[in-house]
Length: 87
Image (cartoon, rainbow, N blue to C red; front, side, top):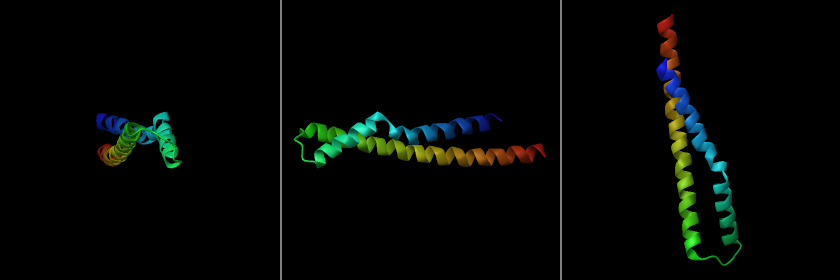
């Protein structure tokens, strides 16, 4: 039963990593890219930092998908094993 609890927590963690990309950080980075595309004069450091942050957010989202898949599959496997043991 403890494996099932762990896998439920892992699934929740995966969802939270994925939906973290809707945060204010992502919105501000996207606004900065819109300003860059509109031709506003911004220094190259802010462009570099915004690119790095956007890549990090994409990496966090991809990690969230991997975590979500791993723990969801483990959760389903443990539920099936738990049901088979109790029958």
